[in-house]
Image (tube, rainbow, N blue to C red; front, side):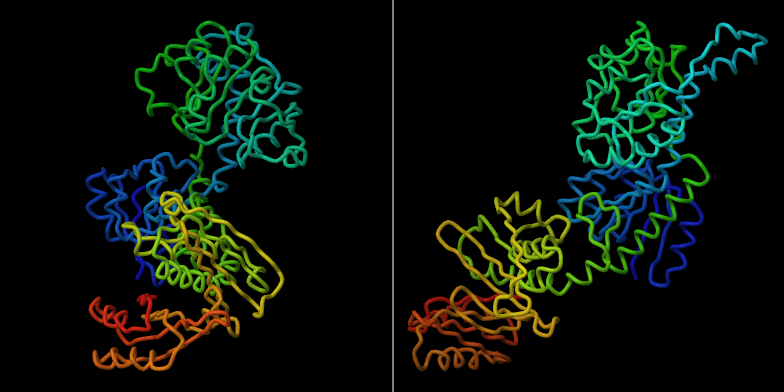
Length: 527
């Protein structure tokens, strides 16, 4: 049974969905500190969190069984994603489930700033009637500037257009066609802030976006401009924001997120031209249910099908695509293990090519599966499709991919070539009948090998008596031969044998085989 730990509060609907799964057990324990989480995390396959749980390096290193961290919501700056990736743990979130709620809060803050609503409320409660003092502005025909044009930014843009605003946006990772399709003008960051009547932030907090709005940007803004941040604390330099508000560089600001939460003792609290909310971006009944149900569904989908919906450290592959690719991925992993077993030098480059029907599925999962085979047992970290590419880069292995619809003797073919300093080895594999994996060629040697179990691979002179001598050594050690394939190359006097044996050979036995006069090399590969 797979086990899920829920360490932050999730809506009942999400928990009920998990409880309906017969083969999944859940445990709810909130409020854990790092030490408490470390004590129990080793028993679980999945960790579901909100923003309170801090998934630190210590927690990740203690999570020896963990395969997935699911964040009910968007922000994942409470998770050490690089280390999770290195350890082969998938991190996913629910970017769309609370998008509308967050976008609506940004619009609400814009309206609140435009009409001085918090100050007006306090004024009336104090027995005042300050209509002339609280003169506001219309948002229609004003410029709404959006920094970050993902799901939330796009929803904000549509709300702004509905309010008859001119909408501009900055996001270097969004294609021009997307902006055009939504009726939004793409601009540079400097143009964004200089033209903004209302600047609203909707980008993730990463190193490149930390303090993306600071004193330089405030210096470019209109004195009547207002800034809204319902995304992540740290996107705005709060010291620079204080100076800009205090000195009249901008007219106002609204914050739902802060560098430190809660913002105790922040000098911003002294100012009247700023509005605060306590990180309410996802705080609606609908959003709380939506993110909880969505992360529960994503976790179950992953455990049952392997599909990692909204994974942040793994390319998206649907369940259908995964099903189509799975047999080719298994073949590629086996080829990768054989390749590294035959190589006597560190690999510097791996080429993965697919042909025929194999080229009809995505090549990247097949390439990553080959890397898993190459790296498994070669590094101290368990290797899987989450961390294989990063580990390969660390080992100095470059990956090159190619795809061809042309068949090469087989309906579907996967070819993997490994390059080292002075050696190149090419392996070709096929699926017989679409499901039965076979190694069909090594360099110039055509062969048909079932890639499973323990394989003894020899290079020897093509002469009588060699196979008999090898069989004698194995027989004397009471090791059974289940299958044997021998191939010769037309232009050489050498042969290659693949021998499937009942159990692994000791180093002493391998030495005896190499000692046979005609045997040049003997290698053992465990698949």
